[in-house]
Image (cartoon, rainbow, N blue to C red; front, side):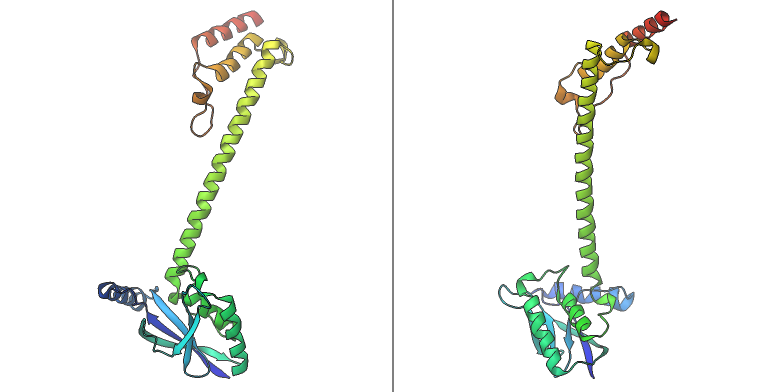
Length: 245
């Protein structure tokens, strides 16, 4: 059995000393101060003096190694022993060859496939616990936020489409009912409804053919607005009630 060691760095490769200092301060406040997390690079050491990690490159694998704690791109922070693996050095080399094929450098993504995700995968295959949550919390939070935003936007678009479709179906249905009323072929008589066909036809006709174009009748959401009650409708209703009595 051999130790599996996680090496953690502050990400200070921005090319700007001011930005690098800001990142170091952020990490001190959010990790050292309140234990929430920060902006970190990580690498895993198992057998020998090299650590293994993952980064971006246009061609070939993104998996690389360097002497542990000596990555020149970042500022070294600390080491954490994650556990011990039962695998031999030969088996670990086999795992690294597999990971090298599965993690091309062009697939690197800051939020969803970064060095910390690689170390998580490597540790899982070695049979030791994954990274502490604070190491990659900022990236995971950003990735989750983007996913939620994307799903919300998708659901909104789907709901809007369904509303427009339903409104158009209702519009065609009401138009068909009005046409049927005009021919008197399928509408119930007065004794069934208590309301005269003249009133029914006038009311439905007002919904469909109120003084506006069809494009104006449907608002931007595809919903057909109902018109306010009109004086001639009230007169028709009163006339109908008198006639029925």
